[in-house]
Image (cartoon, rainbow, N blue to C red; front, side, top):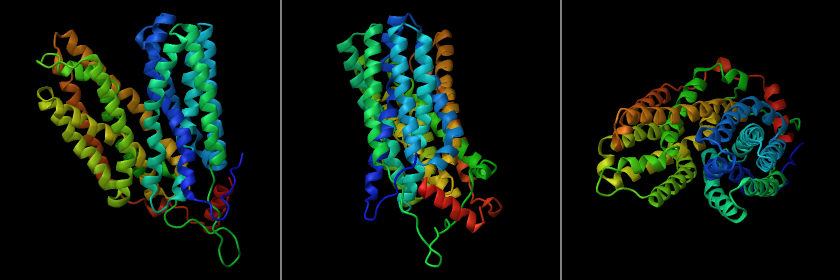
Length: 443
């Protein structure tokens, strides 16, 4: 399926809304926890079991983005958005069938496996196109779209909760909620499929053929053989691990921190804290990525990793004595978490060019899959061991916070080691880059 080339006079500002329609939809993944209590009650599941569809979805996000990135580059954004629509919506429909028949494995397969493929393909679907439309502000452009993934839960969480209240939290109510999700997201994502356009090919004055791509251009296969790719993989993995360590356990963490003080945190206040973190995550994706267009990608990651380590140090040393310090430091960390996701496509473009930046981005997202397991594992495992040892309050998280500081320092060092890609990895055949450019524009 080929997207139409933009006609003369087409506004590039119509492309970010197309990307947003996809990212706001697949961002529902961050709201999966709304369904956990109902699933556990209706299907007699443990907390670990009810988390499995989400965990598998994140793993499939990374894997499908890595293995499907080249197809996204070859077939274009409309094809990718269509695949994302079909898989993500079908995942909900299969989950609805699983809930209605009380077949839990079908929910895992539908939401986790099939829907997870939609997450990965949908996540990377607009990246390359946005960078081509906004070569002057790639950080801002990708930030607008990826902001939607962070903000999708702000829409999906109350919406899902309201549906469960209206339909009931038994298996039939869950099934109906899944069905409504699948059909609604199919319609909403269709707006992106219909609206997306690729830039018109730039012709040379001499022979009328597409002009070859300018500047450094590196193929996806060559990129994964460069130290720059793996240094950025470490940078992203460390930044995401640090952020998701707080995000995944935010509500119990703030309650534990102040449980032994004279001003404990209530359950509603902890829920409000989680909402604030989601807002910081979303705001960081557009705010910090736009800032990177002004100060540079390496400098903004110095902020994410260096200042992030300082924020963790503040929480570790004075967080349990001051709620404002704890909350502000956590909000800053989560803004860096979101900003890191949104800035990395522009960082890749700076290093490897636009040749196959979508495919390279897809491969890099395996760092997210790794961090999605690593961050919660560190925080939860250590907290459980500390609790077994009879400790409580902030002491449950002291070692975890120190480990997060160490991981951010590792990421900071990796970012400092990033240098321009060696010319031996560049695509130098001007005819090849022209052919690739033509395929990308007409894909």
